[in-house]
Amino acid sequence: MLRVIHGVCLSAIVTLSAARAQSVDEVEFNLSPNPAFAQCVGPNPRAHVKVFRGQLNDRLVISLSGIHPNLDFDMFTVQRSSLDVNGQPVPNFPGFGLAWYQTDLHSNEDGKGRTEIKTILLDQIFGFDADKISSTDPTSPPRVPPTNTFHVGFWFNNPQDAVPCGFNVKNPTPFNGEHKAGPLAMISLPISPANLGPLCTSPTNVSEDDAAKDPTGLTFVCNP
Image 1: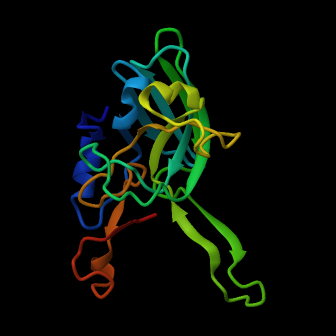
Image 2: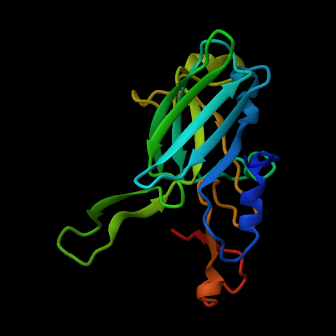
């Protein structure tokens, strides 16, 4: 069992401290509530995630507790987290980037829930738009290049559930099957020093491969 410290697992912290880390086969981490809507999520919202690497795909298990009873959520993997390493809102947040719909979540009458999915997750989860920017140039790059989604978050399925916290139902978010969801409820935090999401277990310091790309040594990518 991996120890969890401040929302991320100890092994991940040790792993990420190296410029070129070795991947691991099991990670666990906590999601943090969106401060603006935390009271609408629950009195003591907790979401714990475990991910197990497999030969053909990976298995993710998410467990909820301290949630208001009988709420529905939609879980996505996304490119960016709106919270920083301390769980505070990111100033001038540019957006969640690429997002993949993964599963629905539900809290029972006791405010608990559990769901699992099996798909590609650790180190390699990505999406892209294979259409070319130029349809007449075969060497043209894709409209959206391969983009990793290393963060896990979930959104209120029903916008009305977030109204008591100030959400405007006239401006729903696209984070459910009908593309009329509520706001972000909880999401994973970046892990220092790489500042990538916890689904990346093997970050690589860009400057180690090519110092000209980042002489500061502060840019990391995930080593698949």
